[in-house]
Image (cartoon, rainbow, N blue to C red; front, side, top):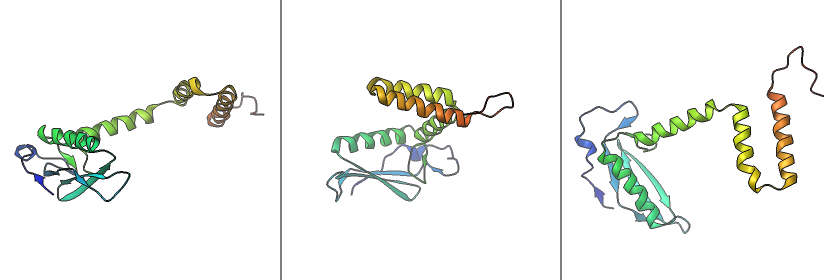
Length: 148
C-alpha cells in the first residue's frame, strides 16, 4: 500500500478536542477479497486504522476524495471511527433533529412518504396502526372517555 504523506492537517497548529486527532494518514484504494465490495479504502487516525469497502472503484475514490478534502481543510478526525469533524457534527445535528420531532410531525412525514405508493388497504392499515399507537401515547386524564 502506498501512503499519501502530504495531508496539510499536520501543519495546523490548533489542538484537537478529546477523541479527535489531526494525525491522519490516507492510503490509496486497493482490491479486497470480496466479490460484492471488492474495493477497500484505508486511513489512519491517531494510530488507529479505519477502513471501508465499496462496490465500485469510483465510489471508493469519491470517498477518498472527501476524506482528502477534509484533511486539506485542517479538520480533526474522530479516532474511534475515523470520521472527519464536519461529518461528526452533521451526524449530531441530524440526531438532534430526530429527537426534537414530535409524534404528530413524525406521523405526518411518515404518511407523506408512504401514501403515494401505498394501496388503499395499506393506507387504511397504516392509519389504523398510527391511530392505535397515538392513543397509547396520549396521557389519560380524568375527563377523557375510556379508550374502548
